[in-house]
Image (cartoon, rainbow, N blue to C red; front, side, top):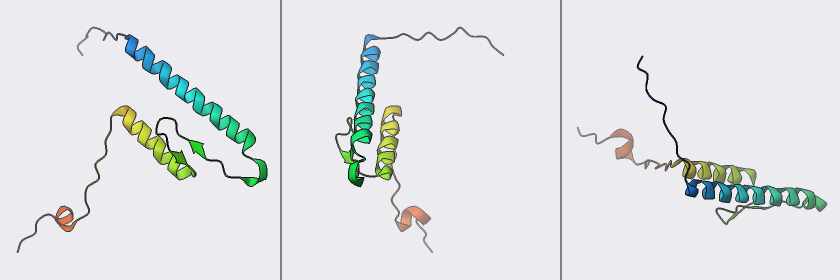
Amino acid sequence: MLRRKPTRLELKIDDTEEFESVKKELEARKRQREEAESGGGVGGASVISVDIIGGGASGSASSSTASRAELINERIGYKPHPKPATLPTLFGSLQF
């Protein structure tokens, strides 16, 4: 096995600024969630959580998990492109 030199990673100012902004957003979300849990349980009212990054509102757990998956995909740079479900794409061009 060949030995190679260790990779050097450099920390840039932009990286630290991005980290701080993401950290503040997560703290704000956590604060909102705690406030909603402490004040939202009165009378059986449903809690609507607000997504800071997306700016939208989600009322159910399934939509919040979808938005979480979208956030993760965006963060890692994954952009899924669903294939169209038409007959030529499913079976190819069949000619007899």
